Length: 436
Image (cartoon, rainbow, N blue to C red; front, side, top):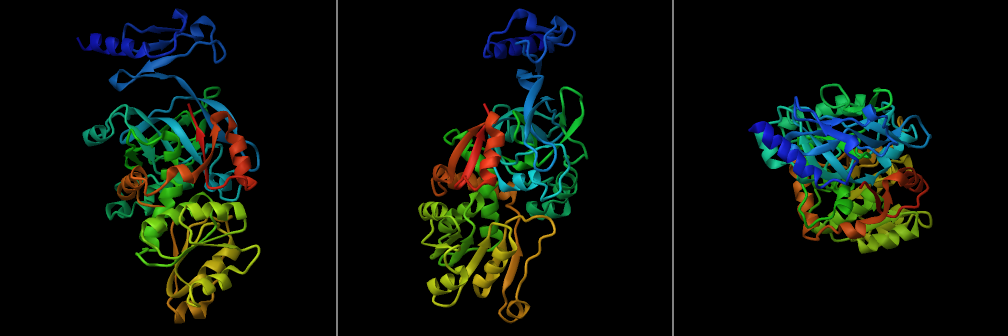
C-alpha cells in the first residue's frame, strides 16, 4: 500500500513538470525511486534529458543544479553544475528564488576577506522548502513543511552553543567556527559537490547563489504569500544587519538622533529601521548625490555629501553642536570609522557594521572616549530566531518598504555583472538576483 502511495505521489508531481521524452526517465521497481536513465541512453547535460529523484512527500527533484562559484581573488564567477545538495538532520533543502547582491560577497571575491575556495557565494535568500534532512525533528517539519515559502538569514544559528542558548544567535559559535572559518556546515562538511568531478565546493553561509541550497532550520522563517520572493530576499542580510545594529547595538529609542555613514544596501536599510523606531533627525552621509536623493525617500531628514563638506561639522551644525545619539558606519573604511566616533554626542553610541579589508584598523580619540563615555560597538547582524519574524512583519505591513529598497534585478546568468556593477558603485540601494 505504501509503495502504491509513493508511486502515485511521484506520478502526480510529474504531471506538473515539462514534458520529457520517455527515454529520459523511468521508475526503479525495486525501491520506487525515479531513475536517472539519461546517461544510459547516451544523454548528458546537453542531451535535453532531465533526471529526477523522489524525496520525502513525493516531491521530484532534479539530480543536478547550477551554482555561481568563486575560484580565486579578482576572477569572475563561473556557473557550474553540482549534484543536488542533500540536507542532514535539522537542515532543509531550499529551491532558491531570490539572492541579494551584497558587499560581503564582494569582499570575499576580491580577496579582502579570507575565505575557503572554491566556494558558492550568496547569503541572503528566499525560496521554497523542498526537502527535510533525515531525522529532522517533528516541530521543525511542522513549522516549515514541504512547500513553505521562506526567508533565510545569513547568520545561521546552531541553536545549541553557549551564545545561542542565551538568545545571542548573532554570536553563534558553530557559525563562526565552521562556516566563516571553514566554509562548511556544522558537521565540518560542505553540502556542495561538482557534477563533473565530485570535488567539494565550500559554502559562504548557505551558498545561496545557486538553484538549490541547504540551510539550517534555525536560520529560516516563513514568508507570507502576500510578499514577493525577489524583494524579500534582502530581509536575510541588508535589513537583518540594519535591524541588529539599531535594535541590539544602538538600542535606538523614539526621539533619538541618528546618522548613517554610507547609504548602500545596509546603510539605506538602517534609515528605514531608524524611522520605524521613531528617530527624530535621521542624517544620511554619502559621497554620491543619487544615493542621498534616494535616502530622502527612505527616512532621511537631512543629507550630507561628505565629498563636498565636512560631515562631522555638518552633523554638529544640524544637532545644535551636540552630535547625534547614534552614528552608524556602514562602509568599513578607517576614515569613516573615525567620522562615526567623532559624530556622536557625549554618551553616544558609535556602531560599526561595515566590513573592511582584513587587517584594517580604525583610530579613536582615547581621551574623548574615556572622558565623554563614548560607546564604540561592533554589530554583525541580527538574531535569526527572534528578529527575522519581526522583520518579515515590518515588511508585510509596509513599515519597511521593500519596493523602495530594491533598485535593480538581475537574472541568474547575470550574476557576474551584478557584482561588477556593485564594485563600480552603480547600484543604488540593493540589487537582487532572480533564480527561476
